[in-house]
Image (tube, rainbow, N blue to C red):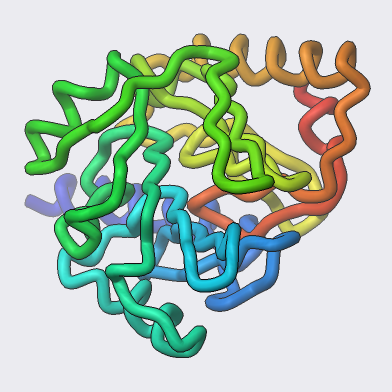
Amino acid sequence: MRRYHHSLTAFLLVLLTAACARRPIQDGQQVGPLIQIRDLFTSCFLLEYEPGRFALFDTCRHRSGRPIRRWLEQLDANTNDVRHVFLTHGHADQIGGLDMVADARVYATAAERTQIRSEGGWVDRTLADGSEVALGNTTVRTHRVRGHTPGSVVYEVEGVLVMGDTVVALRDGSLAPHEDRRTEDPAENERNLAELARRLRGAKAELDWIAPARSGPVQGLEPLLALE
C-alpha cells in the first residue's frame, strides 16, 4: 500500500510539473478571429465567420455545453447559431458538448468516426488531408496529423492553426508534442508534426497563431517550424 501511495504521489507530481510548464489557457482569449473557450484543463474555439453565424472547433468536455453557451450569450447568440463543428479528434473532452449543437454540420476524418460514435457523437461529412470547407468567405483547411489518435487533424483557418491535442505551448513560447496516456502513438505524432512544419515552410504559409487545446496559444509559425 505504501508503495502504491508513493507511485501515485510521483505520478501526480509529474502531472503538476507538466501543467506548470504550459502556457495557461485564458478563457475568452482572442486568437486571431477565434475565441478560446476554457473548460477545466482543455479548450475549444469559437469563430463568427459571418454576422450571427458561428463555427466551433471541438466542443470542449462539458456535456451541458455551459462554457460555450456562456460565450454565445455574450455575443447575443445561442446554440442554434452554431452551423458547423470541426472535430480535431474523437476523445470525450473534445466532443463533450456536441449534443448542444445537434443541428450543426459536424466534420471529422473517417478514421475518427468509430471513436466519435462510441462517445455518442456523429459525423456528417468526412474530411481528408487537404480538404477545404468554405464558410462564406472563410476557408477551413484540413491537415492530417495522426498519432494522438489514428485520425487526428489540425485545422487552418484565418491565419490560425487549431492544433487539438497534437501539441502544447510552453511558457517560454516553444511547442512540445502532447504526450499523455491517451496519445496512441507519440512517435507518429512527432513525425507528422515535423511533416506539417515542412509542408507549411515549403508553402511559405503566413500564420499568426498556433492554438492547442490543452494550453494557451503562441504567435507565429516559428514555434512549429522548430519541431521540423
